[in-house]
Amino acid sequence: MDTTIEDLKWRYATKQFDATKKISKNDLDTLLEGVQLSASSYGLQPYQIFVIENPEIREKLKTAAFNQSQLTEGSQVIVFANHKKLDEAYVDNYIKNIAQTRNMDVEDLQGMADTIKNSTLQLPDDKQNEWAQKQSYIALGFLLTTAASLKIDVCPMEGFSAEEFDKILGLEEKGLHTGVIACIGYRSEEDDMQHAAKVRKSKEDLFNFI
Ligand SMILES: Cc1cc2nc3c(=O)[nH]c(=O)nc-3n(C[C@H](O)[C@H](O)[C@H](O)COP(=O)(O)O)c2cc1C
Image (cartoon, rainbow, N blue to C red; front, top):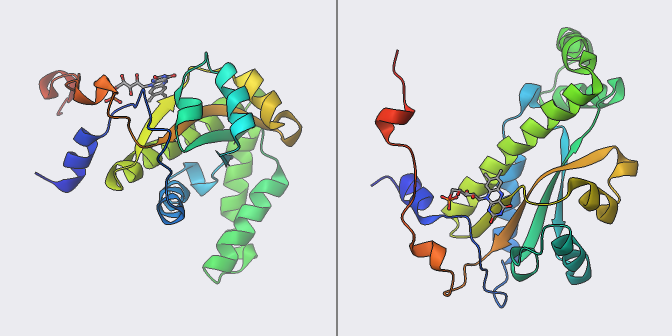
């Protein structure tokens, strides 16, 4: 079987982590590089990623996440915090990054800058937040796949109060909003869910070939 498929069958949304096991710095770096390499609309990456290890902060986050034990028993909590609203300066910075990285003139990228400014920046505020949050879910997907390839366990989560998370992490004043989170670490032997068969739609039910 293809190793990617094997890895994806190995992974599951971990309910109980082994609190004694920590992710090595090297593996964490690789995992985060996977997130860094995520695709995003126009490549704008309209989010910041927070890696939270601090036990007191994780205790507070757990309370804001219906006391789900993964918050404190995992090795780290990853918070995908999206920008609620982008501005022209954000787009200009991105364009500068492309110019530097690809050795181009900013002037030659003006068309691209205008396209982004005339589309994304024109969305109403709530739509911009929604759009940015969607981008962070793609990054979550990259995290899940990279983690599986490293045999690192993850529980992706929406079961938390975003408002509480924003307060605990001071995100509001940075124009950020908690979109989705992931607890990472190593499964506990006692987590029965690791033995549960995967429940998915059949291929016939899921895929449509036209
Ligand atoms: C965006 C998202 C949010 C989720 N929220 C939670 C959560 O708050 N708590 C939890 O235990 N599992 C959560 N899950 C895990 C799902 O229940 C799980 O991925 C799904 O049942 C499929 O099972 P599997 O991932 O083990 O294959 C979430 C998954 C995703 C993708």
